[in-house]
Length: 75
Image (tube, rainbow, N blue to C red; front, side, top):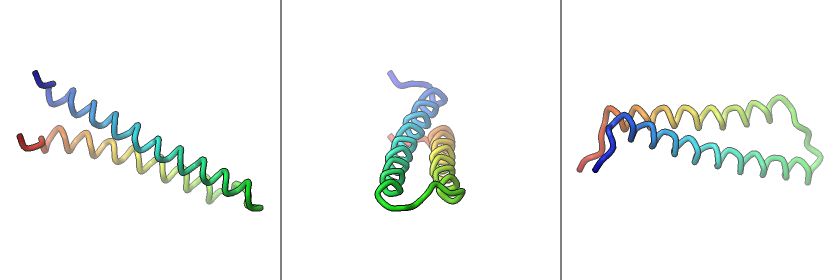
């Protein structure tokens, strides 16, 4: 039995969001480690970079939702 399209779209979007955020966390941890190894400091640019990563994940999840809802996969 398959899920309704709306439910499946929400599920896929949520999974995409979690995957994107996991990647963002990994990149942020690497950035923190890199700044601790070097003499870099957390500047506005670092925070903008992290915000851009999170924003990318949110936009990707939204696109995933609409792609599943309005462009269903071929059976």
